[in-house]
Image (cartoon, rainbow, N blue to C red; front, side, top):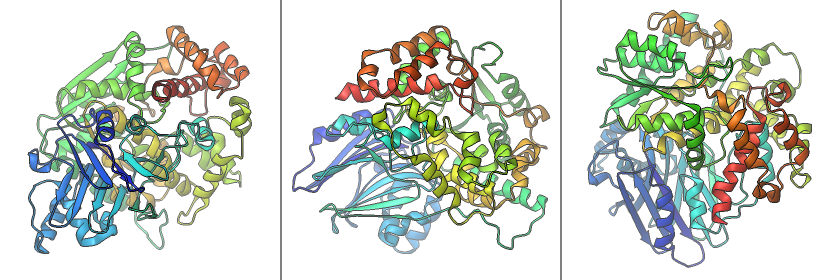
Length: 596
């Protein structure tokens, strides 16, 4: 796991080493173990390394393969690299390192642009072909690893986060109206290639892009998710056994491919608890687990220790239980926002940030349960959508999911940012695309391929990498996801959701963990906004910077500030609309205003 950046000039100029150094500085926390630059003519790469596989200097980056004429910077982990390496050696390739980075280089030489179809893992990388004089950028199928870029007539720059691109300068920081509408409607999910800023784009998951030295560009989607089951008949037990086998394999691969110890982020929910059970089943001894909790607010509990403690007792893990008072949450909140490549409203962003700080003192790699709810239908809104008989797919989806309908969005933002209903257009396109048998298949496909990328996958990447901690997410193994997409909806929706996972867990976990109501990484103070948290948000939204920016209509802001806990001021997913506005403004002040 690392941070990557680089620049390609189209105008005959040479990238400045100082510019790449500024980008590298903003990536330092992603890769604290080594730093490097490489440049030749119109191109220059930068890299910050977190050493996980082949800890020697031979795997430092940028990695240059002089014999093949390629240079690479890579962020991620390729779980099938040993098999690919053996295959490439049989084909006559010679290796100078033991890690997965060099395997990508050889694979690119062997299979060209299609090499990504053979990579099993999470990745974002750039390869410069010194002979063809072209830049190849690629991102993994599930979008687990980020890749942002900014482009002008003179050059293209890319990086693992937006902070690096902003530090390099020359970015159009005007608000993108389409990005703004997605930000405030889909709880901060802005699907690629758009971001909240006009001048920064992001490569979509499961895509590669080639940029020639003269600026000519082409891109291609190399994977999509098939949510149909043509002629496939399996019993419930056969489906359960198939999912269990695929999940075992996903956990094993993420355990074996590391030259450092691996722990688990144990929330106390079914998903992370099941990972602990499967790791124990795989023979892991002395397993490290980590949980975090916060203060209760009113009747809203701030921890799930009562559940995680049961799993710890059953499997005798070496457990760290971290309790954070609300006073520390508010003090540390600016640090978490500073780590966000894009504005994220999920309450658990701060939780993951604070948890990762503690975990990184003990291990460098953790497995985490993100993705299970989206892949196996664990959220409360899926049954609601399933039961709804509205013939219009956007209404059927949006009435249970959108943070605000289009009319309320128009009342939220200044008329300068009004326009067509871009969110509804995108949702309709994604839901009605071919390749899904039922409406729930359509929704879960949309969630897994689009929504989850920015919430929670991006959040986990940003908050763990802020402490040089690599998070691996077995539930988003693309082979497991492909299998689950064919799983009949009733085997997902039954038992209150995630029925097949509950069946797998019966012999492995306490019943109290399996049958508990769906929980969330709790941060009550950012949901029930009161006291010093309300004062904090009021200060942001009443600030001179906010008023001069003019994103929001003041009447709407004042209404939220006057009654932040009014029922109408929570989203359909039970988030605080006030926090959504305050977070976006605070992120802009911290990231954009600071560099312009």
